[in-house]
Image (cartoon, rainbow, N blue to C red; front, side, top):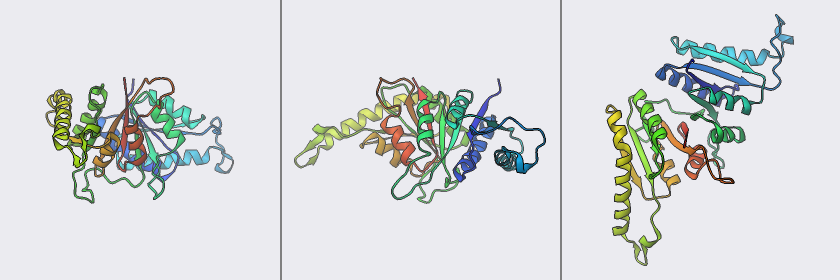
Length: 291
């Protein structure tokens, strides 16, 4: 079966940025790139109708232009177009199950709101069976120097004492493919008993940090051995996990976070770290489902 990376395409600047990111990623991973445009009102393919009466004209033009642009930039990449007469949400979820990963565009930040695509992307990210990557229109080119001068690379958010193999495999593979360093970040809130009338008891916070650092190093050890070419650093931040991760990815090329495939009835499908990442991170965010 052909290995495919699928990107949702709707003609917006966000989806075109996602398509360019997806093309770069497909080329790195030697995958076929599938451009998917879904619209319930698409009609069966007409036979040689002029453009003015072809109801699918604009959908086909969108697909043709995007495919030509990507093919010109990536001449060795196989790019296929797929027009689907279905609700976008259904089509994208089905495509995600058939692909190595699904890539979607995202809205840019505004002073008041900082949300990705909205209900459709939230639904897809929370339910897709495979990794979903969200890309902003104003994304910085990977490998270019960030404005802050801080290192870029791949950042992965780790929760200790929880399954992390799928998450770390994706993150290390992404870092190796790009030839960039990886930073594993774990956030841990300062425990209440560390607070004293005169401030924070640094003996307690030192113990908390050491304990977390030990767990982080243990989680990374087998993956450092499996990917000896990837420079992997580990960082513990004494802050809420969500704030720690969003703060750590400010200059990153890619942020990798996880979500559980199975969760208790009534519980949110995205945890607080994944929620914060998809709402506030400026870099592309890969959400990896895991058991």
